[in-house]
Figure 1 (tube, one colour):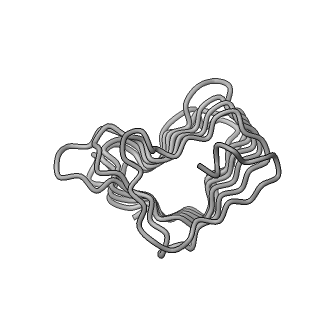
Figure 2 (cartoon, rainbow, N blue to C red; figure 1 turned 60 degrees about the vertical axis):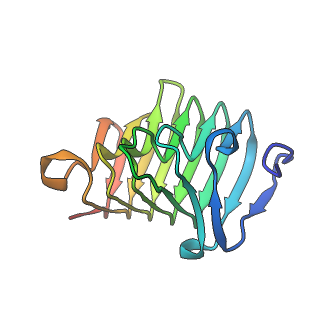
Length: 173
């Protein structure tokens, strides 16, 4: 609710707790500018029990920062959704989050309109396909810890159009 009404330059603080974002309540950020969403790290959980629901979806937005959240699917059946989806957006940062339990990708950066997307300082693990699928013009994937993602013996961590993308100080286990 606060996100839909947020003015440019707003900071939304999500308190400690477990928040189920199933179905219609998926955290959608569409057409927003200059927005920061901050959680309490390990104490702020955004999760879905719906196997086809993205948990955070950012589209057609500019200068969005998501920080300090634990984001995951809590499903008993096969999950086919991405935890954080970014499309046709610029200057997006996902930082200091614990992202896991995706039936697809922990973070999916889709489409050709993405520019300067930063995935930094996260723990991304236990995703069925890849930790990150990345398609953007410019950006950074750094300081993340990846483990137990997808096939290839649990070592499917980063895939996509990575030319010109800064990758440094990532830990792959």
